Length: 164
Image (tube, rainbow, N blue to C red; front, side, top):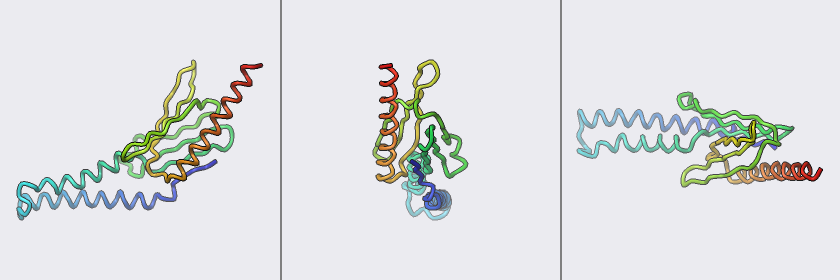
């Protein structure tokens, strides 16, 4: 199964650009407020706070582009950011399906995260984290269905191996 929200990338770019413009205009308005106009008085900090909160919200939501592919013998996860300034934590992981142990969805008030638990060398467990805040409910449901299918297949395979 393939899942991607790459088609929403222009919308996400527009939103990030709009928030960037609002932030720059907020800084300019704050400087003009302090030096020239004095309309807000002691409340001039609001001109910086509102754009900063919007930018912080986008930062908390995480990386907007998520791609998942379970075709073949491997699971592919890709989680990218639109802004190059914030792209240092782009995630691109590929591993065999049999290594998937379990997964967990975390639904925060503002954000959603996907935690993937895979077995690594020497029976250690590695946790991979992905931002899925920008996925629709149907996409999350399809992702959950696909991952449950892989885990069910892995359990059946392990049971067959243990009985042999």
